[in-house]
Amino acid sequence: MKYGMLLTAMICAAALALPAQAAPGKTLRDAHAGLTCDECHVGQKKPVQAGAMSCAACHDPAEVAKSTADRGRKNPHISPHWGTEVPCWVCHKEHAKDENYCLICHTW
Image (cartoon, rainbow, N blue to C red):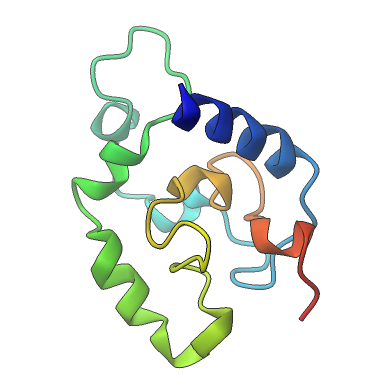
């Protein structure tokens, strides 16, 4: 139940997020141009938001966090609040520009 409430709050906050600094002008679809929809939207007759488990099938969250470790405290892939547990889709959008969820509360 607690995770569900956090997830709902994150979805609402992400909808209000400012444009991202990390990958301006790039969408998740651009980065995964060689994949079919079914590869991420596993078992969905009418595709909805792919879950974080779909991302983790190819991208190890710990390895992704290491790849941006040079950003130190501003590492977008390791939250000081939730570590690597923030679902990828909170910031990475398939049909829109990426958004930096952290900028809702933090200004860097």
